[in-house]
Image (cartoon, rainbow, N blue to C red; front, side, top):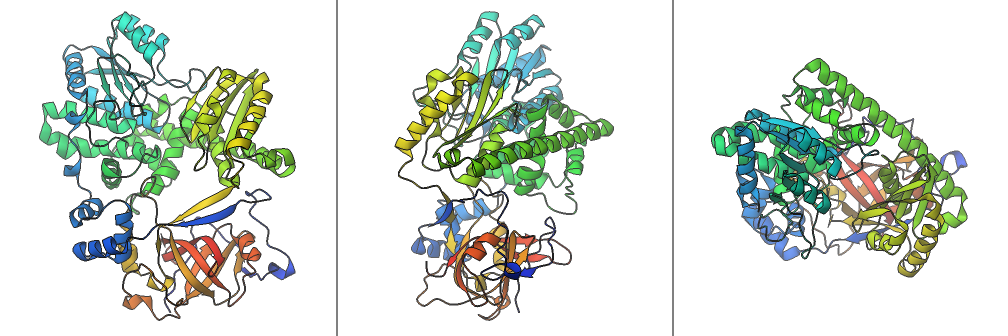
Length: 634
């Protein structure tokens, strides 16, 4: 019997209890505590297949057909493109001198280093901004220069370049300032620098419109600015900083830079690329993949200390994009959210193992504090959604709380969207001032919504799916009133729903270790390169669902063969077993859904799922992770 084991080492489970239509022992299963009382429905969107292109690519590149289909959906149709995508190498990285402004920036930095001028690096308080500072600070000091840095305090200073900092730097003898991950909107501050006699180099990745002006500076490094022909437009801030470092170092020693220094720098750039959720396509995919490869060999005291508090051991298990996004990045970000981000820079720059351990321990404590703060506020929000009928009925949610930590309101907005499938704004009120952060859903431009209330804000900004603002707290009722009217006009025709994008059809009996190995070559996964979600039609339960921890389910399934099924899959292997092979699957937070479908032994369902691998010494192997269930044929 071919089985796919599903026990997760990170999720202890209670003894499994069979459940039927009425739940365990005649009582209904407890629904997930994190969902509102009327959970939004899930709608499946099956990607349009490309049978001819996928078949041609599978033949030319000698790939499994389902992998070829996934590649074609990513715009990869030639065997050479597929080979480069699946086998990233350093020589595929672009020449940094292709970036507009790079030559001028390098020449000015060289002059500053030669003349022993102190250089001020002006960063941001998130992963992208702090790692970018680390890369440039390390580079300047490697070449014998002096680098200072300033990372603004999230609550006291806020985001972006500040004229007061530039004035203080000039008074202290600085004549060259380099921004990292910020600066594209700093028109007034760039003018301050010009009047003071400061040379300003802006390195930033935030989008500009085609007709947008660019701040006046000695050089602007941003692939998105008008006139820049750099091939990769979606680099994060740290990747642009790495490009500047690469160009500078290659002028001194191109061989050592490519063989020694650049691989080391890719570690920081990969962490930032994954944490900043830029699309993992093109050069971004190269940076992430190559950097993850290098993270197997952490050398710096700070990186080793961070791995230790995050319980990561690259000698025992390869570091993945998931590890970076959910174990490293939150700890790095916790410094800027809850305290001061400058200690992240010290962590990655120190060579003292004891100091590194102390700093990493502080990040761990701050991250726990962040989680506790977030959980407390989220509990209040969930209670309101469950008890306030008027709020729960709103199409666009605005939820405010007195004294909620401003460092977590963006995360809270994302959590509310996950639970309600509605655009959501979470507002922290303190000392008569309201600070808000919002997240949106597919098809709704949240920035347009708040722009309709622009006169209420002291400042605001963002993009289609994420916004932020500050305003007098007294104006909050008016903001809610206007946004309710805006939502009634722009959201009335749609019901809240979670969209589940399914990438290919793959019957359960076609899952093999060989296929899983091929799918691993798609990593690192993330924005722009999503983890594949498959659908299996007509899977039959060989036993009643088993309840775990009152919220989760374990299923045992066999793959029935629907008549006339047109599916994309590899050829069966010897490990697939017969059509009666039992596949074990797990569904996290799906107990209520199983009860709603009245699942019993013999039930026939369509299953949306991911293929996962478990490294547990006893239960290790492939596992099916259920992300959606529907009655067969619906």
